[in-house]
Every structure is written in C-alpha cells, then in structure tokens.
Amino acid sequence: MKLQTKIPLKPVAHQIDYDSQVLIVGSCFAENIGDKLGYFKFQTLQNPFGILFHPLAIEKLISKAIKKEAYSEADIFFLNECWHCFDAHSDLSDPSKEILLDRLNLSLEKTQQRIVNATHILITLGTAWGYRHLKTNLVVANCHKVSQKEFSKVLLSVEEVQKSLANTIKSIQSINKNTQIVFTVSPVRHLKDGFIENQRSKAHLIAAIHKLLSLRTKLLPSQQDLLSAVSYFESYEIMMDELRDYRFYDADMIHPNQTAIDYIWEKFGQVWISSNAQLVMEKVYAVQKALLHRPFHSESAQHRKFLKSLEEKITYLQQEYPFLKFSG
Image (cartoon, rainbow, N blue to C red):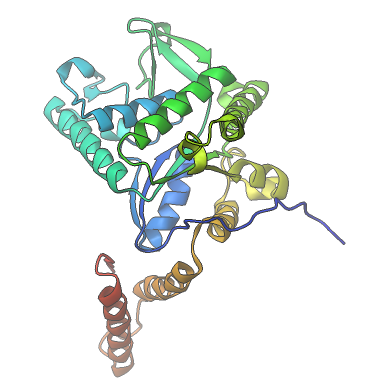
C-alpha cells in the first residue's frame, strides 16, 4: 500500500563537501538548513544580516556587499531606544548607533569575502509580499515596528521577482562565476498575510524561479554558463506533497516542526551533500553526541577512558579538517 507521494530527487554534480565554502541567506527556513550544516561543522556563513524574507532585501544585501557600499548614519534610525536599519533584521539593532554601524559594515565585509570564495550559495525565499517605505519608496527588509502608516504593502509580480533574482545572480557572478547558486522556497506559511495571499506569494516565488531557469534553453551557447550553476531545491514541495499532515507542523501550525526539518534536511543531503562528506558527518555526529554526555561519576576510570576516546576522535578529525572546532 502506497501512503505517500514522493518528490523525485537525484544527486547533483558539484555537491557540498567539507572543503566547500557555503553562504546561506534568506528566511527562517534558511536558518533551519544552516543550523544543520553548522551542527555537522561545514564551513558556512549564515544570514549575516539576520533573517531576510524578501527577494529585494536579499538582492540589496548582496549588491551592497559586492560593491562595498558601507553603511553610514544616514542609513539608520532611532526608535524605541534602539538604532535600526531597514535593510537588516532586528538582531543587529542596538542602543548604540556606532555598534549598529560596525555590525552592518562587518556583515557586509564578511558577506563579500564569502561570496568571493563561495562554492555554494543557498538562497531561501520566504515571501513576495513586502512593505514599501513611503518616504524613500524602497521595499524594506524589516519594519522594526515603525508605524504601518509609513508603509504600503505590495506584492511583487512574477516578473519583478524574476528580475530581482536575475540581478542577484548577476551580482554574484560578477566576482565569482564558479559558485553553485541554489534557490529554494520556504515551506513556512505566512498566514498573517492571509491564506489566499500566502498562496499567491509562494506561487509568484516558485513561478519566477522556474521562469528564470527556463531561460537556459533560450540563451546563446556563450551565455548559458550564466544559469548553468543555478538550480532549485524542492523544500516547499516536499513539505506540501510528502508531509501533508499537521503532525509535521509546530504548535503554531505555521512552521515545520523538528521532524519535518529533519526530513527535509535528509532529502537535501541526498541531493546536495557528497557521499564522502556524509561519512565525515557520521564521525562528527558521534563527537557531538558524546559532548552532550554527562557522567554519573566524573572521576571514575570509565569516564576518563571515555574522555580519552573522545579526544582521540576529535584529534583524528582535526588532523584532516583543521577548521573543525568542538565545544562541550
């Protein structure tokens, strides 16, 4: 008896391994995948500007980083005893404007450096709905609880999303033509926008990505390299079609729960993580699990033997991958 429809997936070329340099940008689901990669000690830079849901927000971050356009006091504002930037998540906000500017510009620098060296850039889009700041006429990444009267809510068309994604790809490839760019759409439902509005938003994102990818066959052979390193991973489709049950959602009935995250991560690994890397992941997992062990008798001979074995496992891994750092 078949009780589940399966998304057909197959491994890709140019998979992620432990020598890969990965940049992860986008919605809170990007954080879920990024946290998994971080747990297994891959070399990642995750959301340097905090969670970004909107294509235009991601485009702006990458463009400013590549052009090295530093933030100044003119780009920030003070509200509710904190300094904020419309381009960044509130995680970067601070009571000190100097600290905020330092964080913003350091994040730009880190992003630019990682794009230059990146083997893989994972971009997770959350929504096509955005808030246009009436004073500047710019769509912001985060409203920071500024009065809604200062914004108009807008839904990017498929064409506008496609143009934004094309701009992002062009920016990245201006300094790194070899990196693999992987787009995915977050399975998190933005129900505050409304049920129909959420589906319209996801549809615009998915349609724009695939419309962009379909251009491969229409480009001249000399131009096809521009999109040959761009692909799509089916996070949204796996959630909607393979995990069609509220038992795979968190208590808010909006976010995928840990079981769903683990499931989609496993599927991501099948497609994007090399078989050699998966062998290393098993060893990293053994160390991570051991680090959580709490002994009944910390001075016992048995525990000393356990610690020695753990130290040997870490040393063995670090001899091959010196960048691996463990804490416990």
